[in-house]
Image (cartoon, rainbow, N blue to C red; front, top):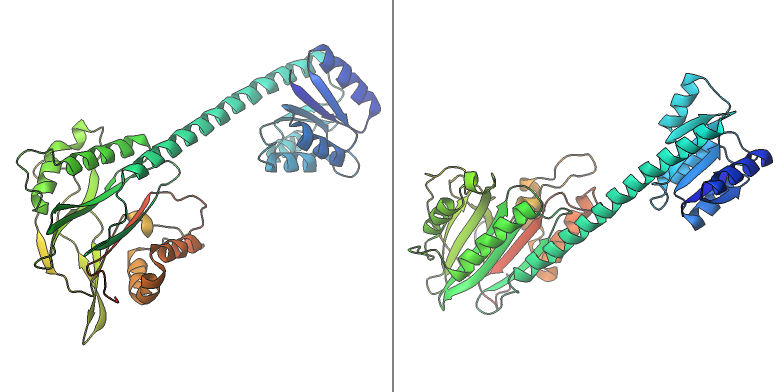
Length: 384
């Protein structure tokens, strides 16, 4: 049975509406002024509200604004009763949140039809809300599944800490790190274009393929070979137009050397303490289109030495593409400046310091894109 709330200071209107609507099978509650009406609405959560425009204490438009501003009540269909018949008054009422306007004196059959139409729209709104909640639940479940596949923090001669924060609609971020043998550590982070399950599923597929090393003939110790094989396997014309960026590196702890290659991904940032320059940042990037865009893309390797003070950051663009209060993007350069300027604090408090800083900049409660961040230290007992 549908709950209908009538808010009107006219006793005659109350009696008429209660009788007519009750005869239609609705459960009817009545309030004599706006404040009482809001209190009843908060208790009853009616499907439809019929409210007079001119009332003591609070007029109908103020009631309408309060109802529509409440997330728990906003889906209620709101019919405004008025003796005003000017077009501009009706437009003003609709612009201020009313879903329908009925002019007094009203014809009862028209009232019944307006109520039936309003309840149909209410049901449609409830169905959409239920579908939205279902999708959000499924995205949350998918995000937890992706999180369950990600590696645990690594300790020992190399320490790795990581964070993964999915966006509202889940994106295509994924990362992994594992020892190819006792001396060689593979590390990568990828970001599939788009959002939703259509982006998450390819990233999971890549993770499973790399983790199982199931690509025949691929030298997993040579990053450019890995990217070439991925580019052959994940061409976007056979992947629902999805492509992805990736940074892939292999660290040789015996030689303290890192070989890396990237495909359209933000560069990893290597921080080193030097005697003359103090803390120095180096962007580890190579040329190469994102995976899947062009079948004949050439990927190259670069090599760098790693000293005991080195700290490496690998990340997706979601960590720095956040909107500040001035509606400007924080940006890559500002993020790098944070890593350099706050290195001692980050070393003390870990990646949560960076995430909390990003949260203070972000104007949205939920991120527009996945955020993935790795911090790699190459000497467990170093003071960094």
